[in-house]
Image 1 (cartoon, rainbow, N blue to C red):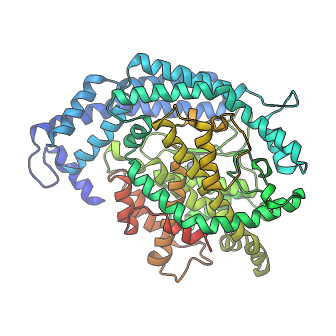
Image 2: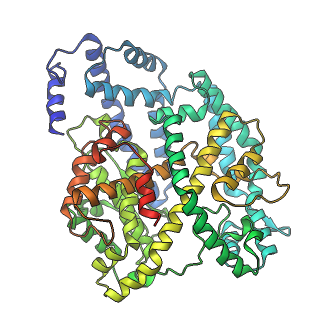
Image 3: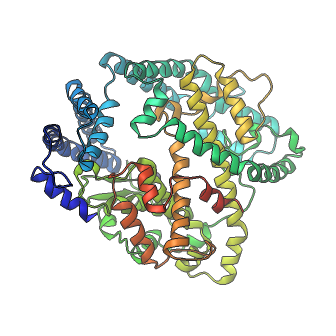
Amino acid sequence: MRNWYIAMGLLAMGLTTQGYALNAKETQLKDFVAAHVEKIKPLEKQANLAWWEAAVTGDPKAYDRNSEMTLQLRQVYSNASEFAMLKELKESGQITDPLLGRQLTVLYNAYLSNQIEPDLLKQIVELGTHIEKNFSTFRGSIDGKRVTDNEITDILKNETDSAKRQSAWQASKQVGAAVGADLVRLVKLRNEAARKLGFDNYHTMALATGEQDVKDLDKIFNELYELTNKPFAALKEDLDRTLARKHGLTPDKLMPWHYHDPFFQETPMVYDLDLDAYYKDKDVKALAERFYAGIGLPVDEILAKSDLYEKEGKNPHAFCTHIDREGDVRVLCNLKNDEYWMETILHELGHGVYDKYLDYDTPYLLRSPAHSFTTEATAMFFGRLSRNPAWMQGMLDLSKKQRAEIEKVSDKYAQLKQLIFARWDMVMYYFEKGLYANPDQDLTKLWWDLVEKYQLVKRPAGRTNPDWAAKIHFAAAPCYYHNYMLGEMLASQWQHTLVTKVLALKSDKGVSYIGKKKAGRYLREKVFDAGALYPWNEMIRRSTGEPLTAKYFVQQFVK
Ligand SMILES: [Zn+2]
């Protein structure tokens, strides 16, 4: 990336990367970018610091400060005359310098998604908040008795009586009826906003501002569908036989409530895989630190700034944040020595090394991962190691026999987990596409058509309840769910390049990456260094030799 550094020097002198003088439009953009960065840089840093403090302490004042800063940032990006100027520059065709052109794209998209008319935006935000509040306070009931989500989960995991399972599953869907009509109203408001900005509907607009296109995504998801059809059907038949036996049924009598979570998005716990015992006497933080140092991506500076253990008032989940785009990267965890937290800290530090090892000579606006799903892919790539038998043997000093024991179940478990998730994610992607294209259609029918097609789960007869609306993501994180699957695919695509090209191995069997500095160097040079200099698919092509594809995901998980 050193050539970009030279480009920056040239830009400062008013020259293009080719050494020509900047034209008038380019100079105008260059000055705008400089002033813009000066304005947002302190706001972003303050917002991130407030968010961090809020998560670590639970202090309401920190939450308020974060909202205040976020609002100020939003005001910057909703400025209509600045957006008009950026649009004019974009349409002029005169921004030919690649580095300036890329910054213009990033700025344009950030402004575009904030150009919704204030009145309409207010309605959208208020209705969205209202729905989310209903979600968090709603409790389903079984035989008139209110139950919590945890009680429902517990029944679906352990109960053997089919009638009781059915009641629990139905209770999990009652929130759908409570928020369904509001959600459809919200979808229509979002569509109205998108149409005013020149898009078919909100789904197309949300994709476009994330530099994604329905046609490309359809192609990738269709490839995934075709490649997983047969193997998924075979795995599911096997799973159904096991589940049916547990419930004293024949497999054709299995209904949605016989799976172990309300949406059949997770692996039912029918194959015993208890890895916690292997981590019980270890220190997951030390293991992660040693592993990352071994591949040449040390994380000690990140860990020193992080908050890793449980305490009163602290956010109970985990995340990684880059405070200032200048290397202040932190991870929040609530570590315990078990497999779940081993995966989590490897995952969060996967985000962490992407941010930490960005090229800091890149302009501020491009100093970030290429896309939210590309950093997710890095995190998933590393997170998967916590149940990789070769990695576990190497890091935990296991015997050959112990490793063989893990291998017996872990491959099957990984296959099932990944295929179940892939088929579920297809339901989410195609449903959301249909929902925004035509919110007036029979959405319950659309939902169950997709569930039957992709998950091979039978619809209960005569079902009219808006079961789809029980998924909070449609309200809280619209048009985003497909990115989880893109992340999984990309993690496998990198694995393929690492195994076949970087480490030059015959297959991925037994690969653990322990001590493989070449692997760390590859990610740093081909992925992290590039930041957001290229659109995501261009970065993927540069780092793997081809655009994003489902085939390596299938190769890795369909055996
Ligand atoms: Zn993540």
